[in-house]
Length: 352
Ligand SMILES: Cc1cc2nc3c(=O)[nH]c(=O)nc-3n(C[C@H](O)[C@H](O)[C@H](O)COP(=O)(O)O)c2cc1C
Image (cartoon, rainbow, N blue to C red):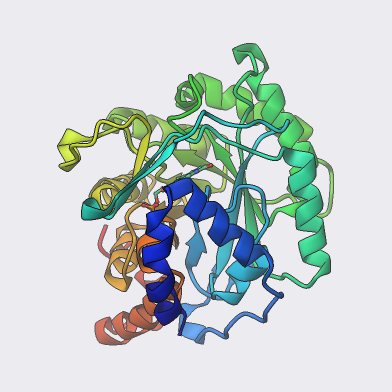
């Protein structure tokens, strides 16, 4: 039904530029009533940290930066949604146009640069969503403002954690967007230590400390990725989100010269290599959320077998519409049966 509706709406949406189509879709989804989530078969349930996910398929960061449509993500059957990136103060992001479709490649390039309503507006929206009965697991993805001086970036993360952590089932620290100048330098071990020391101090003392994950770029050298894994373990973080969008073009067969981060099908192989490397290097100790180029049950399955406990997607929603979530879940059930696994958790890392 959803897939049919999307098939009708897609040509009109694709007549508009990518960001306008996105805004129209989000404003429609934000008006949806809060619907009960479709129930998922027990084989798809997965427990991670202290959280029970009804299925492993999540919405990736960037689709709902300002937390306007959490009710819709629940109704569409996602197992969780990663909201954000949220910045401390509101900011407009880069000048438009800043999102581009590459339909032949099933890919997008974006250089949005964290447009955000700012943490206070987003926090209030999440509070209202919760009051309205949204029970979906919500991750909040955090990033600094563009005009924050380098010496003050850790203070931005601290402020975000202070304001947002009580509202998040888990937190993702974004140091990997290619569109905020200098951000990726925070992936170095020394700088990671600075950020997470500040976060530890800022974390409110409450009954529950949300799990904290780091989101990495797919453009790291292998040695750097391994060093990040070691530092993530040293700092006792709860996992890694792999990966953000890539700056690579020709190596992935892309000819477009638009500046920004590339997502979608061309990113899939590289994201999977990163997931596998993190799983192997950490001996399975690091929990991984696999993201990049997932558009089918096979894609999700192979990310899981490479080591991902949860999987996220964004670009596939643009090309296939919201029906893709139910389709992937159905396909995962068939794959579990065919391969003789009792649950998703049993399959994690079996192909690493
Ligand atoms: C238009 C757009 C905006 C994005 N914004 C963010 C963001 O704000 N923060 C972030 O961590 N990732 C952001 N991402 C990256 C996605 O979360 C994801 O890591 C990437 O797109 C790969 O997944 P996909 O191939 O399923 O799209 C964005 C991606 C797209 C396409």
